[in-house]
Image (cartoon, rainbow, N blue to C red; front, side, top):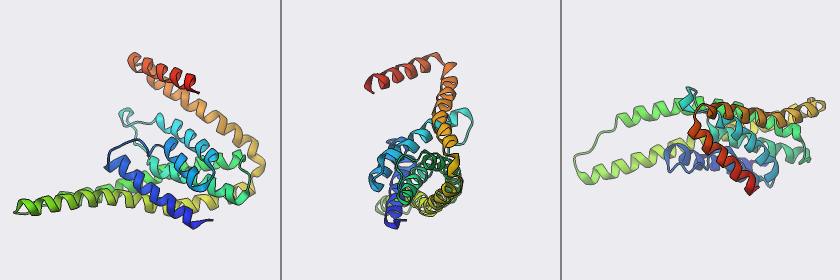
Length: 229
Protein backbone atom coordinates (compact mmCIF):
# COMPACT_ATOMS: atom_id res chain seq x y z
CA UNK A 1 0.00 0.00 0.00
CA UNK A 2 1.30 3.40 -0.99
CA UNK A 3 1.25 5.35 2.28
CA UNK A 4 1.96 8.64 0.51
CA UNK A 5 -1.39 8.27 -1.27
CA UNK A 6 -3.10 7.45 2.03
CA UNK A 7 -1.65 10.61 3.60
CA UNK A 8 -2.66 12.66 0.54
CA UNK A 9 -6.23 11.38 0.75
CA UNK A 10 -6.31 12.11 4.49
CA UNK A 11 -5.24 15.70 3.81
CA UNK A 12 -7.92 16.00 1.13
CA UNK A 13 -10.45 14.74 3.67
CA UNK A 14 -9.39 17.48 6.07
CA UNK A 15 -9.89 20.18 3.44
CA UNK A 16 -13.25 18.78 2.38
CA UNK A 17 -14.39 18.59 6.01
CA UNK A 18 -13.70 22.31 6.39
CA UNK A 19 -15.77 22.97 3.27
CA UNK A 20 -18.56 20.67 4.44
CA UNK A 21 -19.01 21.77 8.06
CA UNK A 22 -16.89 24.83 8.80
CA UNK A 23 -16.43 26.72 5.57
CA UNK A 24 -18.18 27.86 2.44
CA UNK A 25 -20.15 24.61 1.87
CA UNK A 26 -19.42 24.24 -1.82
CA UNK A 27 -20.67 20.60 -1.82
CA UNK A 28 -17.22 19.37 -2.88
CA UNK A 29 -17.36 16.95 0.05
CA UNK A 30 -20.16 14.97 -1.59
CA UNK A 31 -18.84 11.55 -2.72
CA UNK A 32 -19.62 12.11 -6.39
CA UNK A 33 -17.08 14.98 -6.30
CA UNK A 34 -14.62 13.68 -3.70
CA UNK A 35 -14.31 10.34 -5.50
CA UNK A 36 -13.03 12.20 -8.57
CA UNK A 37 -10.23 13.65 -6.42
CA UNK A 38 -9.49 10.17 -5.10
CA UNK A 39 -9.26 8.84 -8.65
CA UNK A 40 -6.93 11.64 -9.69
CA UNK A 41 -4.60 10.95 -6.75
CA UNK A 42 -4.55 7.16 -7.21
CA UNK A 43 -4.74 7.09 -11.00
CA UNK A 44 -7.98 5.07 -11.03
CA UNK A 45 -10.74 7.57 -11.81
CA UNK A 46 -13.23 5.01 -13.12
CA UNK A 47 -13.42 2.72 -10.06
CA UNK A 48 -13.39 5.73 -7.73
CA UNK A 49 -16.36 7.28 -9.53
CA UNK A 50 -18.23 3.96 -9.46
CA UNK A 51 -18.00 3.96 -5.67
CA UNK A 52 -18.72 7.67 -5.39
CA UNK A 53 -21.87 7.55 -7.52
CA UNK A 54 -23.32 4.63 -5.56
CA UNK A 55 -22.59 6.29 -2.23
CA UNK A 56 -24.07 9.55 -3.50
CA UNK A 57 -27.31 7.86 -4.53
CA UNK A 58 -27.60 6.13 -1.16
CA UNK A 59 -26.89 9.26 0.88
CA UNK A 60 -29.09 11.53 -1.23
CA UNK A 61 -32.08 9.80 0.34
CA UNK A 62 -30.87 10.63 3.85
CA UNK A 63 -31.51 14.14 5.12
CA UNK A 64 -31.95 15.76 8.48
CA UNK A 65 -35.38 17.01 7.37
CA UNK A 66 -36.57 13.40 7.32
CA UNK A 67 -35.54 12.76 10.90
CA UNK A 68 -32.33 10.88 10.22
CA UNK A 69 -28.78 11.63 11.24
CA UNK A 70 -26.50 12.50 8.39
CA UNK A 71 -23.51 10.20 7.89
CA UNK A 72 -20.03 11.64 7.52
CA UNK A 73 -19.91 11.85 3.73
CA UNK A 74 -16.31 13.07 3.79
CA UNK A 75 -14.92 10.06 5.64
CA UNK A 76 -17.26 7.59 3.95
CA UNK A 77 -16.56 8.88 0.46
CA UNK A 78 -12.79 8.99 0.87
CA UNK A 79 -12.57 5.59 2.58
CA UNK A 80 -14.94 3.94 0.09
CA UNK A 81 -13.39 5.27 -3.10
CA UNK A 82 -9.87 5.16 -1.68
CA UNK A 83 -10.09 1.53 -0.56
CA UNK A 84 -11.36 0.51 -4.01
CA UNK A 85 -8.49 2.26 -5.82
CA UNK A 86 -5.76 1.10 -3.41
CA UNK A 87 -7.08 -2.47 -3.43
CA UNK A 88 -7.17 -2.51 -7.23
CA UNK A 89 -3.51 -1.48 -7.20
CA UNK A 90 -2.84 -4.70 -5.31
CA UNK A 91 -4.99 -6.97 -7.47
CA UNK A 92 -4.31 -5.32 -10.84
CA UNK A 93 -7.82 -5.77 -12.23
CA UNK A 94 -9.45 -2.38 -12.90
CA UNK A 95 -12.73 -4.04 -13.96
CA UNK A 96 -13.23 -6.00 -10.74
CA UNK A 97 -16.82 -5.18 -9.74
CA UNK A 98 -16.49 -7.20 -6.55
CA UNK A 99 -13.81 -4.89 -5.16
CA UNK A 100 -15.92 -1.85 -6.04
CA UNK A 101 -18.97 -3.36 -4.32
CA UNK A 102 -16.92 -4.25 -1.24
CA UNK A 103 -15.50 -0.73 -1.12
CA UNK A 104 -19.04 0.68 -1.18
CA UNK A 105 -19.79 -1.41 1.90
CA UNK A 106 -16.74 -0.07 3.74
CA UNK A 107 -17.63 3.45 2.64
CA UNK A 108 -21.09 3.13 4.17
CA UNK A 109 -19.62 1.81 7.44
CA UNK A 110 -16.95 4.51 7.49
CA UNK A 111 -19.62 7.17 6.96
CA UNK A 112 -21.49 5.99 10.07
CA UNK A 113 -18.32 5.61 12.16
CA UNK A 114 -17.05 8.98 11.01
CA UNK A 115 -20.34 10.60 12.01
CA UNK A 116 -20.04 9.21 15.54
CA UNK A 117 -16.47 10.47 15.83
CA UNK A 118 -17.36 13.87 14.39
CA UNK A 119 -20.31 14.30 16.77
CA UNK A 120 -18.17 13.48 19.79
CA UNK A 121 -15.42 15.84 18.63
CA UNK A 122 -17.97 18.54 17.82
CA UNK A 123 -19.40 18.33 21.32
CA UNK A 124 -15.96 18.86 22.84
CA UNK A 125 -15.26 21.73 20.42
CA UNK A 126 -18.54 23.47 21.23
CA UNK A 127 -17.88 23.21 24.97
CA UNK A 128 -14.50 24.84 24.49
CA UNK A 129 -15.99 27.58 22.33
CA UNK A 130 -18.66 28.14 24.96
CA UNK A 131 -15.92 28.98 27.44
CA UNK A 132 -14.60 31.78 25.19
CA UNK A 133 -14.55 35.20 26.84
CA UNK A 134 -13.95 38.48 25.06
CA UNK A 135 -10.84 40.37 26.18
CA UNK A 136 -11.09 43.94 27.39
CA UNK A 137 -9.64 45.65 24.30
CA UNK A 138 -11.06 45.60 20.77
CA UNK A 139 -7.69 44.60 19.26
CA UNK A 140 -7.33 41.61 21.56
CA UNK A 141 -10.96 40.60 20.97
CA UNK A 142 -10.49 40.69 17.18
CA UNK A 143 -7.29 38.63 17.44
CA UNK A 144 -8.77 36.03 19.78
CA UNK A 145 -11.96 35.69 17.73
CA UNK A 146 -9.94 35.16 14.55
CA UNK A 147 -7.81 32.51 16.23
CA UNK A 148 -10.90 30.81 17.64
CA UNK A 149 -12.61 30.67 14.23
CA UNK A 150 -9.54 29.36 12.41
CA UNK A 151 -8.74 26.94 15.22
CA UNK A 152 -12.29 25.59 15.15
CA UNK A 153 -12.16 25.03 11.38
CA UNK A 154 -8.75 23.36 11.58
CA UNK A 155 -10.02 21.10 14.35
CA UNK A 156 -12.93 19.94 12.18
CA UNK A 157 -10.54 19.18 9.32
CA UNK A 158 -8.04 17.41 11.57
CA UNK A 159 -10.69 15.06 12.99
CA UNK A 160 -11.78 13.84 9.55
CA UNK A 161 -8.20 13.67 8.28
CA UNK A 162 -7.19 11.43 11.19
CA UNK A 163 -10.32 9.32 10.73
CA UNK A 164 -9.44 8.66 7.09
CA UNK A 165 -5.79 8.09 7.95
CA UNK A 166 -6.84 5.28 10.31
CA UNK A 167 -9.82 3.81 8.47
CA UNK A 168 -8.52 3.83 4.89
CA UNK A 169 -5.60 1.37 5.37
CA UNK A 170 -7.86 -0.94 7.39
CA UNK A 171 -10.61 -0.84 4.74
CA UNK A 172 -8.08 -1.44 1.94
CA UNK A 173 -6.52 -4.46 3.65
CA UNK A 174 -9.96 -5.81 4.50
CA UNK A 175 -11.09 -5.39 0.89
CA UNK A 176 -8.06 -7.24 -0.45
CA UNK A 177 -8.42 -10.05 2.11
CA UNK A 178 -12.17 -10.34 1.59
CA UNK A 179 -11.78 -10.42 -2.18
CA UNK A 180 -9.21 -13.21 -1.98
CA UNK A 181 -11.51 -15.38 0.12
CA UNK A 182 -14.85 -14.96 -1.63
CA UNK A 183 -13.93 -13.94 -5.16
CA UNK A 184 -16.34 -16.59 -6.45
CA UNK A 185 -19.24 -14.38 -5.35
CA UNK A 186 -18.22 -11.66 -7.80
CA UNK A 187 -21.31 -12.18 -9.93
CA UNK A 188 -23.60 -11.57 -6.97
CA UNK A 189 -21.62 -8.51 -5.93
CA UNK A 190 -21.81 -7.10 -9.45
CA UNK A 191 -25.59 -7.60 -9.42
CA UNK A 192 -25.81 -5.84 -6.04
CA UNK A 193 -23.68 -2.96 -7.29
CA UNK A 194 -25.98 -2.59 -10.30
CA UNK A 195 -29.22 -2.78 -8.33
CA UNK A 196 -28.24 -0.46 -5.47
CA UNK A 197 -28.43 2.78 -7.51
CA UNK A 198 -31.87 1.72 -8.77
CA UNK A 199 -33.03 1.15 -5.20
CA UNK A 200 -31.64 4.53 -4.17
CA UNK A 201 -33.44 6.23 -7.08
CA UNK A 202 -36.73 4.63 -6.03
CA UNK A 203 -36.22 5.90 -2.47
CA UNK A 204 -35.54 9.41 -3.81
CA UNK A 205 -38.64 9.26 -6.03
CA UNK A 206 -40.76 8.22 -3.07
CA UNK A 207 -39.35 11.07 -0.97
CA UNK A 208 -40.09 13.69 -3.65
CA UNK A 209 -43.46 12.31 -4.76
CA UNK A 210 -45.59 13.94 -2.06
CA UNK A 211 -44.26 17.46 -2.75
CA UNK A 212 -45.29 18.41 -6.28
CA UNK A 213 -43.11 21.50 -6.59
CA UNK A 214 -40.01 19.56 -5.53
CA UNK A 215 -40.98 16.67 -7.78
CA UNK A 216 -41.22 19.00 -10.79
CA UNK A 217 -37.74 20.38 -10.17
CA UNK A 218 -36.35 16.86 -9.62
CA UNK A 219 -37.90 15.69 -12.88
CA UNK A 220 -36.57 18.73 -14.73
CA UNK A 221 -33.08 18.10 -13.31
CA UNK A 222 -33.23 14.46 -14.42
CA UNK A 223 -34.23 15.44 -17.96
CA UNK A 224 -31.43 18.02 -18.17
CA UNK A 225 -28.93 15.42 -16.95
CA UNK A 226 -30.13 12.87 -19.53
CA UNK A 227 -29.90 15.44 -22.35
CA UNK A 228 -26.40 16.42 -21.18
CA UNK A 229 -25.29 12.78 -21.11
